[in-house]
Amino acid sequence: DIQMTQSPSSLSASVGDRVTITCRASQSLSSYLNWYQHKPGRAPKLLIYAASSLQSGVPSRFSGIGSGTDFTLTISSLQPEDFATYYCQQTYSSPYTFGQGTKLEIK
Amino acid sequence: EVQLVESGGGLVQPGRSLRLSCAASEFTFHDYAMHWVRQAPGKGLEWVSSISWSSDDIDYADLVKGRFTISRDNAKKSLYLQMNSLRAEDTALYYCARGTFHDAFDIWGQGTMVTVSS
Image 1 (cartoon, rainbow over the protein chains, first blue to last red):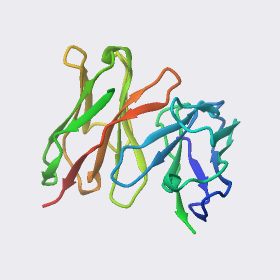
Image 2: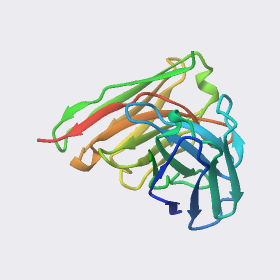
Image 3: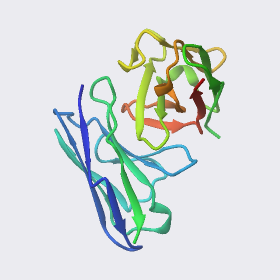
């Protein structure tokens, strides 16, 4: 199974900050890497697919980059609605493992 | 509005069974692979099972293989998860999700809670 390791596990930041979350896979994924935002009591939301493609309707302050084993999600200027937990997920091979999550909190 | 709505969750004793359903609306259900993902209390997201549009390709996480069965009825625009021999560790919020051409999960339901306890 492919292991996904996100860092950091938690992060405190302020509105307007630039934030980067990293995700490392235990083997190459090509570009089969997705990013999701999850808020309590809500359905997870797809932000980025195929490592760097912005899902329709997602604000352009979200961006993703990477290939192979190392990937990053960047939020260029944090907005109040961005405080949530973020997950990476590989869909290169089954089981389609998620990272452990990064909880983004208000400083 | 494109939507997925799960149902069928509840409190069940260990060793018993439960069947979850997921109703799709406002999209061509038979064009898409579908997935189940769960989140145990205080934990992260965990992929459970996937089914292709034709039901020809089905896959399970090792933790549920042999106990859970995924299925779909394209005429009814519905996805199912039959869960047998339930264990306490199956306690979670279960989400259904739509799979995209790029193998991401782009539409998710609100989830249905399954609690396995005596």
